[in-house]
Length: 179
Image (cartoon, rainbow, N blue to C red):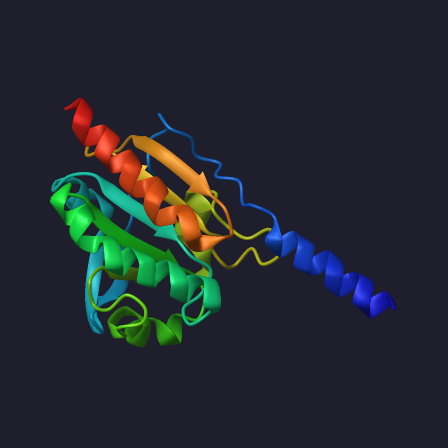
């Protein structure tokens, strides 16, 4: 009975929405990280990406987990809409890094359409204060839209992956409409 109570308590913590510590108007921490695009190693630089336009930076807990699979697939399906808005999408994870190359190319996930960065020890996630409470060496599920000047335009934190694409795409469109 005690184990069941602990399991229920742990599950409820995982179900709680994450809380993005960085807010609109904050300066986004600059980073460079190793990652993958379509299974190929790449170096990802937030500073370089911002030179092209707004960046959608989304943190996800781990490759090849149900919520992360869905979120990556939804981003890959919408990638042309982001590109039409001159936005770059970058996924960042601290979990299951040994599976990230395959995750980046598999059609049912990223489909080779955007890059994913490896974040060993959740160092990048910690600078964005986007780590899981129950597993602080893993990133939580938080999405940011960052303006080309490095200012955070939009932050959305929720463990349910279903709204991250719509939230970030709408924020990018709103930013572009004001230009």
